[in-house]
Length: 472
Image (cartoon, rainbow, N blue to C red; front, side, top):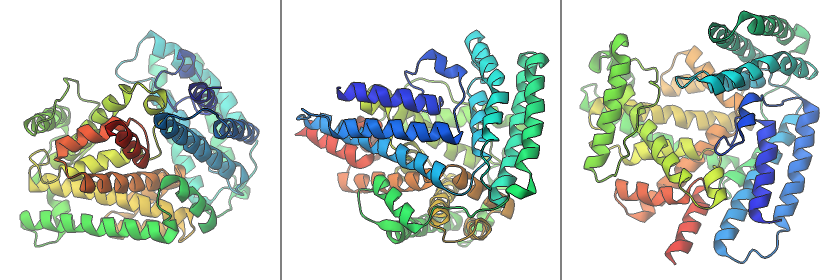
């Protein structure tokens, strides 16, 4: 089999496991399916993926260096997926909220502003599948940590809200039975006999995962040290911005004052978002960027105009990344995206633009740095939780103190990283890779954006390798 055929085999399996993964160029019928989370299915998928990994390793006639780059990307992707599935099947506890969050996202992808007949048909199919989907989950009799049970209960409420919205577009006869099944599933989640288990997989298992996320043998201690050093730099940026705003290095007080400094009327949020989207595009153009004409994505929630502006920078970074990825001629670089790469890229773009007119004012720099601080703490919390260097409650307390958050927001951070193990850590390590590349390249921010997007969805070290091949 060729490399492209093995890629197609991997994508077919991955999309059956999770139809929301690898959506670009996916068959239309994928949009009507939900993922699978029952243990027999996960075990079978892991076995099948191991066979694909073996076939990739045994692939002959890979003499072209570009093909070797792509093979490395594909085998790393498959290995990471196998490791993730083996962890999910082999651990002694379950996360009952993970499938529910998947179901919420599956409905959200179909109920956007572009809702049409095709989306309606796919939405009907997904909703009709939900009772059976919930039923298979109840075959898993493993205990669930109390922290994750609480998160799962909130996920039930979120899914019920989506179903209520769907009922306004469809008919109650379809949605009614699903709500009944969801109520029974809520009772199953809350059974006291199911409580138990400790979050995380332990340091040894985390060490193995890190080898797939970082080209350097950093280990748990090294990765944590790298993240702590990055956080110290972000905190210096917060202090500088607070000083500029007249808060004498007290960035927490400056953040508390942002809703007054950068006032945003909730009724004006949509218009303000359009204005910030255009402002960032104009700023990038003035720096020498060639910006496409494209509509703003849906407006994010924000309490102040500065945070909205910082989010607009990240939204443009995401658009630039996707544009570069989707124009790749080589399928691996177009269809695969390395773990954490998107989120790490968004954060890196904001960092390289921090001192430019795109970020602009001290209040936007403060908001942008606070987003970076939260991202860094997500990565630290992810690492520490999986390495079992603290309980969920202890890590929530730590994150809240370091980020200046209330305890509920800090607990939500822990839920986020527990729900997607290693995603925040992967983003943090990808950010380190992008920043190291930028420091070595010696390019202007715009020149670096052009350079770095040439690797598509390749992991940063592989993108640098691929571009060095093309330059040679």
